[in-house]
Amino acid sequence: MNPLHAPRELTLTVPLPPAGLGPNGVPDQVFDPLTRRWRSVTRRLSRHERTAIKRDYQEQVTAAVWERYGTRPPRLRAATMHLLYVLPTARRDLDNLIAASKALIDCLVKVHHIIPDDGPLFLRALCATWEIDPRDPAGRTVITFSETTPAGVPGKRKGASRAAVL
Image (cartoon, rainbow, N blue to C red; front, side, top):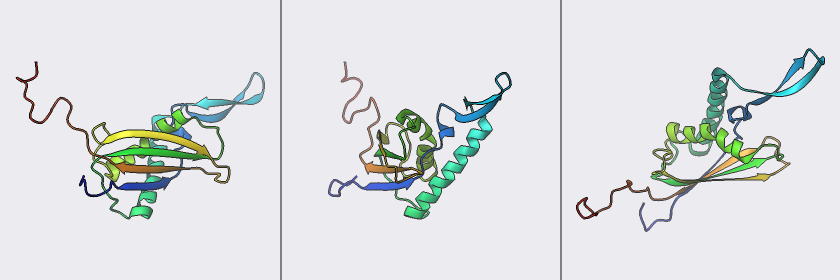
């Protein structure tokens, strides 16, 4: 990064991650023959169901990236990432939203190459916050990348040799 230029900041708005990508499964209804009533349960999704949900969500993210930046989004050497979840109600947990956002982060890094990798050398920090906005019934995720310098390779220092370190 050139010290004469201010760090770049990229902002993107995408839909909220689907609940099916989170660790808790999805709500479902089952009929209990003993009580002859329907009851609510949480159901784990099969691998194929999760893959289909992930693919659909990544297509939505890709459409949002193309709408905002075209087919060639800007690339950053390294960045901090801030996720702002705007929810219509407080019915989803922040930790489940973060877990469900793995598909989002993978799409932005591996498909659109906004940063080279999502490891600690290039994704220097990940911050997640949320706010409630009842006027937005679908909710949204606002992603902000702030460019930083990449981390050095651990254990390597310029000018230092193994013999000098005792």
